[in-house]
Amino acid sequence: GDALAVSARVAPLGSRLVLLLVEDLTEARRIEAVRRDFVANVSHELKTPVGALSLLSEAVMDASEDPEAVTRFAGRMQIEATRLTNLVQELIDLSRVQNDDPLEDSEPVRVDELVAEAIDRCRHQAGTKQITMAAGGTADLHVWGSRGQLAAALGNLVENAVNYSPARTRVGIAARHITAPGGDLIEIAVTDQGIGISEKDRERVFERFYRVDPARSRATGGTGLGLAIVKHVAASHGGEVTVWSAEGQGSTFTLRLPEAGAVRDRDRGRTLME
Ligand code: ADP
Image (tube, rainbow, N blue to C red; front, side, top):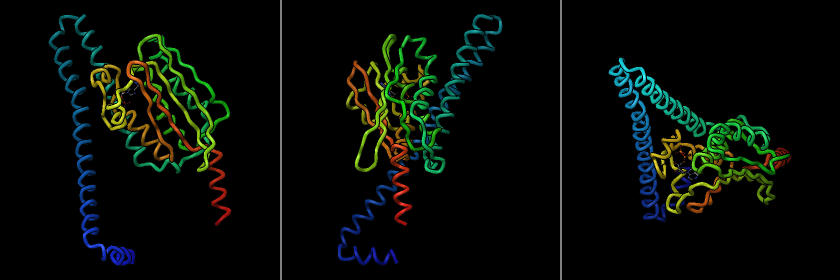
């Protein structure tokens, strides 16, 4: 029935229909290419630490007479193993946020708890760089969504802020309620005084495995997947993530998410109308 209705509507448009079909094919081909690139990227990213581990284990065997060298190589093996663990964990996170319907386990989530958790996760790294972290405006705010996914998203933003900042700088997290006609929002902004991101790179940092400086990202245990996860979480919650940055001065990543009360009111309205 639907197909007939559609073809009746498009039949007079002959060439438009062909164009639509061509666009469909192009889109299907694009999706296929993205999938193939992703698999190739994952394979490459896995091969790097595995290759290093293999070389290092050979080095350990060759150096069995030299305990100091063995300790040194073992230390580097530990770094590579951590890198591998991070990558596998982020791949799992990404596949979860790509497949899960966040509405399934959604609930009102306290913003102050999300922020405290994100800060906790980075406390060690921030401490070694003497980076101070400060949060404000988080009291009494609730977002609607999956607690685990939201924690992963905010955690990634704060982790990046710390990783891409020099020592003795500040990372600030500011939250506020925004009244909006389409439903109220909660805005959470993570600001750093770090290296910043050029305009050209700003558009691409949310792509899976895109890194401005791959060596720097790897050195801090980065996987290139963090911001892709953030973007997916924001989108699946009906929100968005945006970035502002000035090179050499710092960046602000802003998450905008539906406010818990707004979602409840909207759903209540829907129930009343049914
Ligand atoms: P990674 O694991 O490499 O940090 P992400 O997806 O989290 O991967 O980020 C992608 C890239 O975006 C990073 O490699 C880095 O080049 C850049 N980036 C992310 N956050 C920041 C930030 N706060 N300041 C400067 N650059 C950033």
